[in-house]
Image (cartoon, rainbow, N blue to C red; front, side, top):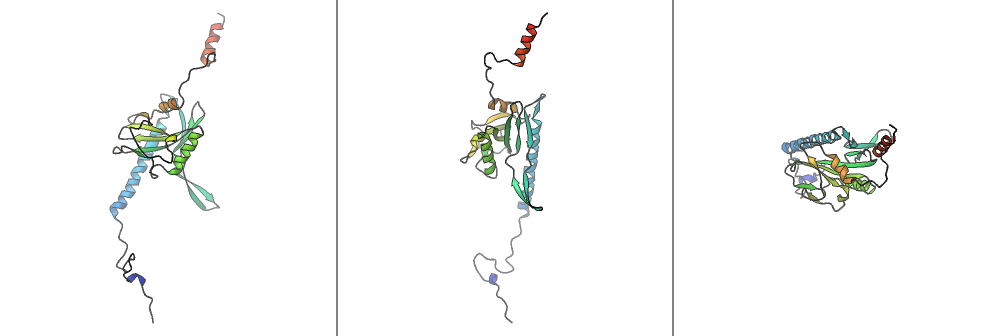
Length: 221
């Protein structure tokens, strides 16, 4: 009775040499680093998300109405089959009193980092950068919010700087907008002031205050 020849027992380059050439066991330390490194990143992201939401109410004034998006979504085809959908960014909302939409992604960078590699798809995905640029071009407030632990500051980068040729951007780059120290809440008031600078009122424009003053002056004694 003939037996089939085991082609993997020959000395063919690139193939395992028989049963003894088993796949090397995974390095437990590497696996642990991957697991706990991801856990640390998730904890850092959750903490930063909490800081963002806590920064919405400062001294009784609410400047933004924000909603944190889930990390991923799903689209169902039929009854059981579902396909994962990537989220376009981390936060969406509205600038209160302006009626303008706001979209941004939030990143936390360690104390040993001198900037952020915007060209790294693991940090800012291509579809996220494209979405933020599209919304900014449509008139929304859109960009990247970063917590720099090295500077101990919150920083903002407008979405117009997230183009296809985006690259490593150092913290000293003049395009960053500083939103306060990490020892406190995020100063979103600076962000609003940058996008909606105060403009002088036209001569003769009637405001609620001026109308009230005129009514008080004209009222009979």
